[in-house]
Length: 85
Image 1 (tube, rainbow, N blue to C red):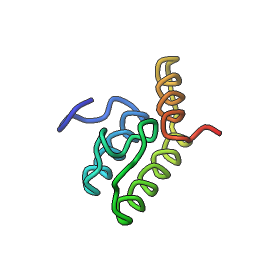
Image 2: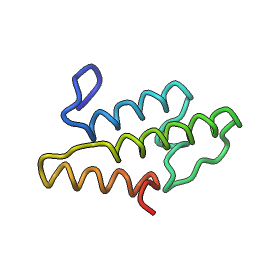
Image 3: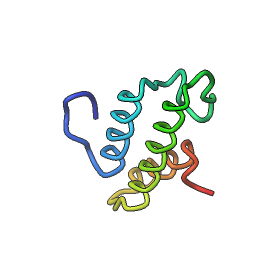
Image 4: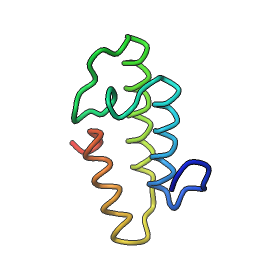
């Protein structure tokens, strides 16, 4: 986990791809986190955010976990980004 290091597992890989997509769209934890809100985003950023969040949800659904910690990570990340109805 971390810049330049390989992902630890499928959840980490999904999160890393999501972080990269957010960075490319100019999103960060201050303007892109759904719990806080996404105020002041351009229409292009809104679209990129929605696409990145959907890709994260899709990736999490395909993730195979091998430990209870990975299952918990998948659940909490999914919950934070609206992947769980």
